[in-house]
Image 1 (tube, rainbow, N blue to C red):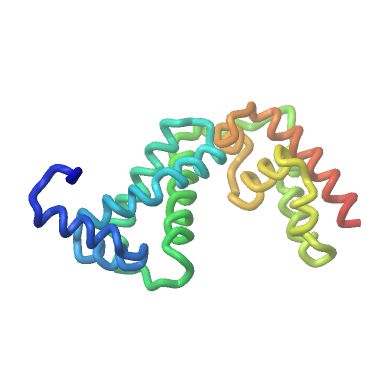
Image 2 (image 1 turned 90 degrees about the vertical axis):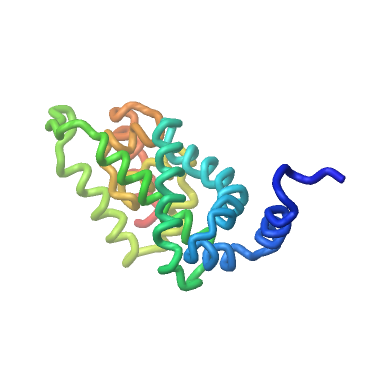
Length: 191
């Protein structure tokens, strides 16, 4: 019989934990069961990394955000009350950790002489105004993936152009150009 290494008792605990739902695993984690955290990691780390990599080109930041996510799950499992799914809860933690890491690592703000600050703020105004004047979700879906990613990073996630560039793996100037294109397309679609 091919069993993992360890005693029969450990095998029994592991097999019972493997049969638990995600919510049951979180409850066990709240009671400090390390095997439950290992099982939750085995189930969710792969897709979390894939989604984080889709949002950030820096593998080091992705790995750090993933580690921070599971530390937060360990410490915060007792506060999970089942609203939404465990996967959605973990994704929320992951993306907030990634954004926090990006903000920590950003250099001191330097004024960009080639782009007025008012243009960046007007994108937010456009998106917020679009919620009153049209189908914003439909307009966002109609944008190309490159433009939609920039709008999502800068407007919805609140990142600066530099942070968005680091997240997406493109230069800050490209972020600005794509924002101008997205703004023009959104303005036309919402008019």
